[in-house]
Image 1: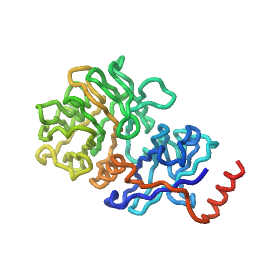
Image 2 (image 1 turned 45 degrees about the vertical axis):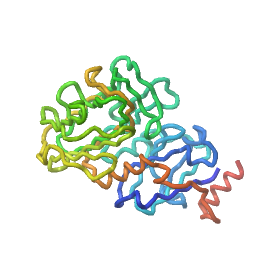
Image 3 (image 1 turned 90 degrees about the vertical axis):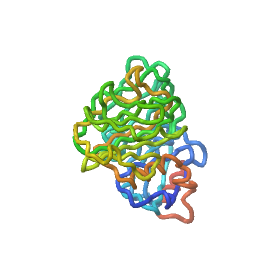
Image 4 (image 1 turned 180 degrees about the vertical axis):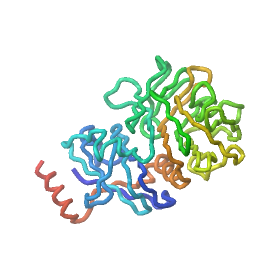
Length: 330
């Protein structure tokens, strides 16, 4: 099977980003549709010589994530798959957990693992798997923004197995597709990750438990929207919508305190979410605006971000020749 290569679109990388997970639509990688065995056997590299390997996570036949140590405006990605090699264990050097090792405390893909029969709240970082609020009635795994998403109809939520608390900087991001106003992520009391409802047109945000609230952000437009909120080293709160320049919340006043994140999707019914959630990420780092813009560009338009996948061309290197020789003998 060929080595498949793509090159990042320079315009999607404002500045070089280090240790950043990147999304790849595996359905576009293969010359023909990949099987699960082929996807799990894949090895991801930052060069066509197949020398510098990156950690990667295979979520499904269409969703994969790799970790770029240094992503630049000229970066290439090479994916080599043979259908024979075993998948990496989650804790391996190039396994799932390593993709999310740059300050991430939680990452939910908000969909369903291929072998599962119900929505899965598996934390890709390995430390904060979720559990449901009893029976998640009205919950459906659907096409999300990044692979699969989780549709809620205002009747349930997903609770973290253990709370995540921050006394310093953090970044919280998620994709939302609102069916009806009332997006909620937080607990039933004052919570740092709560968005609406507050008025018919505005979202509600609380920076930490017991803190002041900010209602200056209008609801996002219809369809998919990427929301990211950061608390910086000076305790100022920035709000990022769809990769645009951040807006400072709380009238530029510092918001220091312990931020405890409890659940995603609602508190049973009073402020539950009606719509689709996807790709929830929590980190103990205040991501830069350029990082968040790059993350948004990659997830919003993966096909543009990576462009066209092609076979590694020309005579190739010795490594490629050896790899193709193995393929020919299979």
